[in-house]
Length: 179
Length: 179
Image 1 (spheres, rainbow over the protein chains, first blue to last red):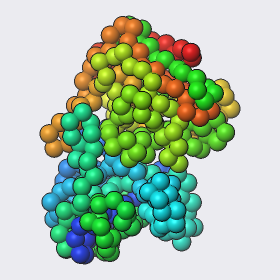
Image 2: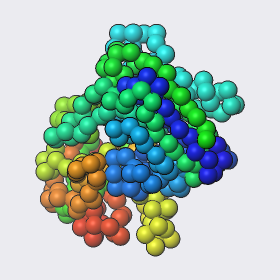
Image 3: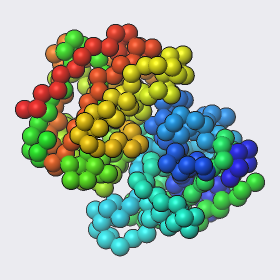
Image 4: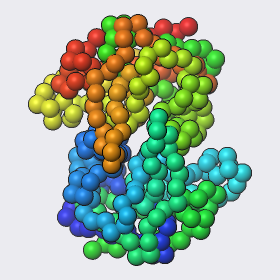
């Protein structure tokens, strides 16, 4: 995506989490960093109009629109083979693997999976820092829109998690529209 | 540190934040991951007896003791040159730089700075996911103790932040005691 373009992630059937990653086009070692974004915004998740920044504190995406109820997460790691193995499913597709495959198609090496931007994921912080894992409450057709603040590569995984309830027990597709 | 050994971080004068990092000794590409630790514990910060895990979801440190009031953070990125530049101080020591220098002494390459375990750092999560940056409330002599769950390399930076109030305006030393 060239700087200034927008991408809209649509939850086609509702109740579906997506793991979104963003890398600087000119050097994919620079990537969207949840920790630096929290540090810059002093929020768990940017407000409308605020930027997600890279690990070099440069804006990479801006939160440009959101028609969902507004629950999104940047606390929880991407699901991966170790996660499913611990849940008793040694062979299972995962967001980490989806990212690796998508980047490989572009000739990029994923390296360590970054902390994703978990769109539509509902992880409230409760008393004493306890986290709850709740089913996504996005409705069919709800979307979240990002504007590229620099030339970047975006990857999105419709989370295949069916062992815990975050996708309402039934993973479904997301659409990704470059506007 | 060999598995089973303990390390105690002591706030000698009180009110001082430390950024702690941990790497697997046999492959430093595997490191303590805040995101995976939150995912495994369903907490913003492990409770006493719980483990910090790596990006491969293997326990690396266990929280073995804490004599402080209990405020610690895993949300905020390490301070770095870009952070100080934005605060109007283009030349300033930082936790990210301290980590790089410490790892270089061991012949290790830091690569991307991981999300640190920010001991004694007080970042409460408030209404609507807002984060506040409060002065550390650890008292002189307060300590937090970790037990190695695998052979690992630990790095600690006494945070040199003097431009915002997290260290009560005056960075002071931390001690690191391997027990």
